[in-house]
Image 1 (cartoon, rainbow, N blue to C red):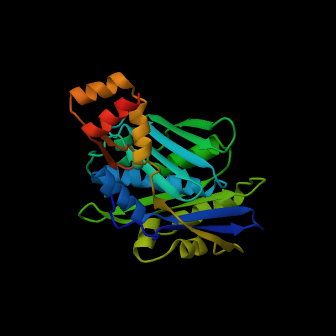
Image 2 (cartoon, protein in one colour):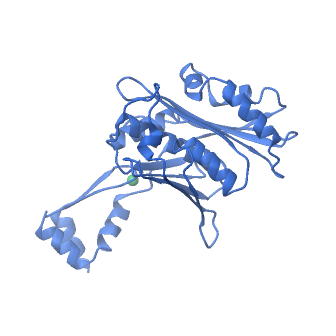
Image 3 (cartoon, rainbow, N blue to C red):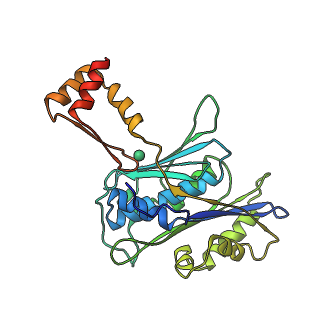
Length: 297
Ligand code: ZN
């Protein structure tokens, strides 16, 4: 599926204020969230929830070292049921929401993501740090609005004071007008003071979606957040929606179903249509393909 929105328009910047021991990441994710919306055909509330989660994954991806991966999963009692997003250290992101049709009435002009996710539930973060075992942490949802839950996870599970702001704004036709996020953390030894100060600064500033919509970029937004601190801007790098599924991998998954299951697909539908959960790419295996698989078993 080529949607023509995959050029490197979205990117992240890192600001470092070493003297005060704090770092901040800012990401513009407008294009990749719009690509996710088109791929999954999400309704507005689901678009905002998935877009915020993808932006959270982008920010978490910024904390990774080369070759590492992170997956975040929100599971709640609300109608969206589940959101799963993944990021790697190269800025590749993918994700899906279990119920893409969910759309709720606005509350005070805001998309009601907390009701869509549900007040009760869990955020699970799984990190592949290249070690023999995956690092997994879980917290209860506290805000069910994505950004607040991510900050709570980082404070509770990682024990690092963190300021997070994530936003997704839509156009009237439901397409994505602006999406992005900021994550601020102390550098070791992790003193929380400066982060608290920058959290207040973030709250005084207009929402990140408003800044992005008026044409500001991640680097100018970081400059504004860090304006009272001596800081340097580092390493612009692209973030994009990119799934690692392929026809070959899907073929292998079909083979692993076994002879009986493949025969029953042949007897039933006569062909197999497999949609990737993460990117909604469709892979069709014809009768000849399936008979070819059986012939190799
Ligand atoms: Zn895929």
